[in-house]
Length: 122
Image (cartoon, rainbow, N blue to C red; front, side, top):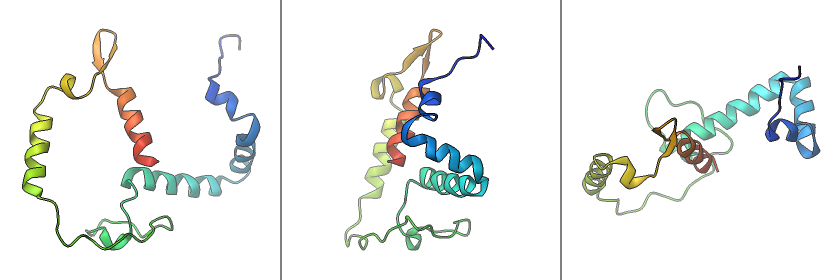
């Protein structure tokens, strides 16, 4: 076991406020599954607002955190302009938009993706 190491995040789970959650979820896997499924849903949907704004047959049922949003604006965005802007952005070199980390001599966007996911879930 001498080669086993722990990360700071591993240690944090065994100390302070996090320990109560570790113990709770260790004893109740259904509570863990429920909390994880809600967190995952919120992360992947970006908390898109109330279910009335979600369209399509594949939408899951509304979640408690989908608080009501204000009514849609009377004047919507110019979606053709938005589309042109997006097309311009994706046709631009990534190095001009987002500076990549270098990993083994190659550009790597993994850390950027993690930061993006964190901001989307907050």
